Amino acid sequence: MTYPLQDTWVIWEHRVVTDNGYNSASVELAEFSSVDDFFKYIKHIPFPSNFFYTRGGERSKLGGRDVVGFSCFKKGILPCWEDPQNINGAEWRIRKFKTLEDVDTAWVDIIMLAIGNTSGNDITGVRVVDSSNLSQNKQMYNVEIWFSNTDDYSSIENILTDDLRIDISKMYYRVHSQAKEGLTTPKIQADNLPNIAIKDKNLLNNKSNHKHNKKHHGKRNGNNDRKNNRKKTPTPDRNATAIN
Image (cartoon, rainbow, N blue to C red; front, side, top):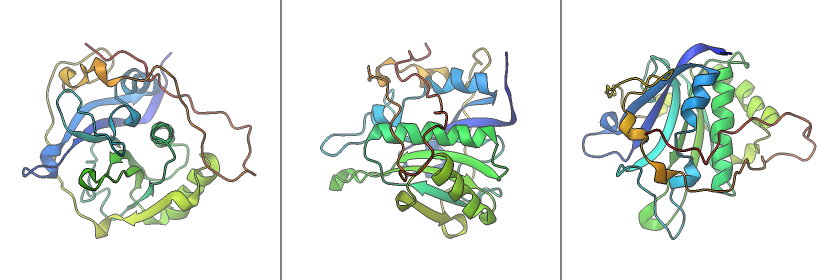
């Protein structure tokens, strides 16, 4: 049985920005419009804990590519602040995590919040980024939820703190009109896989990216007086085999 979504969503891969600018560093991977297709695809995306930088270590390359993160945005909206649907909006960033597995959990939970569209807010996308400063051996990770209307500031804050039980002290608010990235991003064209419009199947052929043998779901941060009987969001299998 298929569970359609209200909107079609696009998965993007974000790489280290070079002299070619932000545009060439963002690549469209796939699009989906149902819950089933989301899970069929997301299980092939490496989790942050599979490749993000850790202090004293290094950021792992994915298929030889210097990837710093992934994002999921509504189709027709680019994952940059200057897009017309983003420029007058803002984002909530979660910036403090005890473990990389906590980053994994926040990333998937907030994507599912966005694509489920149960909040009634104008959420445009979700992004996870490794913002670590490798030269200074400083690690920093961001999980961001973007929305087109700054009036949704408090309602989205409440969803994150009440429903997902994220500690408000770990969140940071940013208005997009005060930022700058890029605007147009090229697409990679390739054959489609069944049920999922993959733009480049070679980008997914990275079996070595799934290193963990233990399944984590992480314990969300929050106040002790939150309700403990909420149903946990299902997390895709970190041990899934990449598409060949």
